[in-house]
Image (cartoon, rainbow, N blue to C red):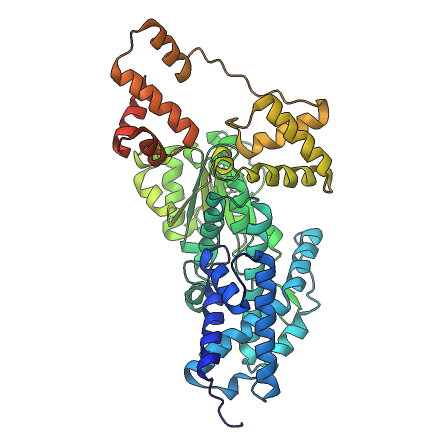
Length: 493
């Protein structure tokens, strides 16, 4: 072992910045700022260019250490070694970034059988060269793949860069790695089963897509002897729509049943909790439609992590994460009208709300073009700017720029398909005879509305447009509680 290398003031400043960047949320503003600082670039530079230059600068610094004979952890000690350890891992991770992306695509194509990882040996050799202990190599490699998978699925499946979508992506990343990646890596990478998640949002906002991004991003151990991961991430996420099963069969679908447990049970059947990978997650969609007694049984699973198949007394252990989703509002949930309080508090380690499409477009009109481009490419199998322009012109002409998109992203997809089939889009026509706007117009014409009726109707219209009590309060010049009170009155009427 040679002499200990001490970082000078400038090196320590640079490597501390890299250290903080490594642990920062890649969808947050702090990470963008740190990347630009490392790269020595101005804020106007594109995000991709900033990241690429940041990686290049770190590579230059690491190679310089290597030239000095200090390209290993043993050349440092104390705080310097802690900094360099993270810098080395950050550098190695980004050297295999494209390899990890290709591995993701290969695994998607292969399905539920784990594929061989051809570049694992090269990565392990680099960890060895940098002085990392042999018994840590598999863990670091698996953690690197988890980081890349999470970024891949959150970035590519949730399209859009409006402020509310950036916030959503930031929250989903934290849902996978907690608010501190450093703590996650030290203590929680194999203990996330206790962190359940409730996803809220209107129909068609993409709750299932968000849940899948989380469910496919769990930690999966790497087996260097076999040269592959213990599981394929394609099989680590299971989605179950609870509203599609009659109450008599729902418990069997959730917990499984034994042969002879009821008429028609001709063989043992594994429920969704049995089928879930210990490295994965279950989405319980439409959780707001589940009967009280089923909520109690689900509560027991969340509390004790065990369940009993129908017709059996044997208990089985569930090791995955639970993600629940509903289109019911937070006000309904908080009021106890949807979920039992004890069940809600077990589900809500994290509550994530999906933004409606109208809010996304209102914040950034470019969101519509981005979504149309993504949707068209997914349907066609290839980019088609001509079709995107055609659909955009139709939306401007027939729906208008202020269209509400009540069906959200799902409606937008059907809009694209209808334009492809018949060159027009026939939106769902709802009778307006009982609508808020109709009642307001009728009441104003007749002159028989009270101030309370007029106020509640106007505030309701503002809420339908802006989707948030705070925004309505600012527009109308009243406080949030007043807005909620009048809107509740309007809903009752």
